Length: 342
Ligand code: KG4
Ligand code: ZN
Image (cartoon, rainbow, N blue to C red; front, side, top):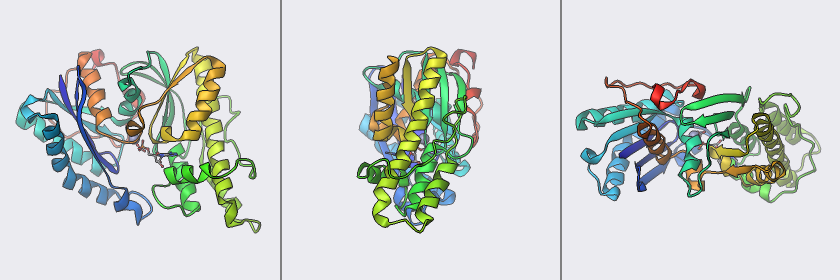
């Protein structure tokens, strides 16, 4: 079974072909980071236009590299949400139109399902059930994953997502866009401990998060009369440590409560080294193991969309017969059902 996957939910245009037996046959990815950098954030209209410009090019290139024609495909999968409405519509329209022309199935995929199943692509995949920590620019969630399509929300952020907190704090520190990786690089040069930043909701007794206060705490530090630019790396390190401490504590609490020993980390912030170190250390104490997607699969890409669709199709999911352009900019992951129930 060969599935073409299309990702266009935000500022990355990703295309890939996944084959059930041989794995990833080809993939292409274009990031719009430079396009949005001057505005300090993603401009939805520009994102949509750039997806339109590049998707046909990337699809042609990906199929060529895989040595395939559209008629060789069994299905075309696309991110149907959550994400920017216009950006999602580009991927959905292209996928549905191609599938209709080729007489094959089109399959809408949930972006976060793509993220959280991507560690299954590794040579040593995690076994179900596991706890998933989804940490991206738009989401911070802890889920119980019993199987493909069987997701229970355990806790989530009440305000900013972890990646959003990184990006907003990077903006306060004038690090440019996208700020997360730059803030992490600065933090690596700083020492933890000079600034006492809060650990929001660390002792809230539930598995929810809140990160907006942390960004405000950073703003207060840089606005104080005692602030000196040479403190910058230290402040970045203390900010990062605060995020890591809260994410780690809640992820471990989720494992303990569910009596599980496998944690899967997904989403862009999963690339953060300090987070990985914090989670790995804490997991050892619990006798648990942490699985991460390969670094290139942490950020948005077409591979995870093709892979998630293939998992569903292999478990008996029947794509909808009526072609229609359906996108859901807001789409709770816990609404998904197992493929056989779909
Ligand atoms: O999953 P993703 O690529 O896109 C979605 O939001 O769906 O995640 C992007 C987020 C951004 O907020 C980015 O700043 C953050 O992940 N990020 C990082 C790192 N790499 C990416 N945050 C902290 N440390 C990193 N190394
Ligand atoms: Zn994402």
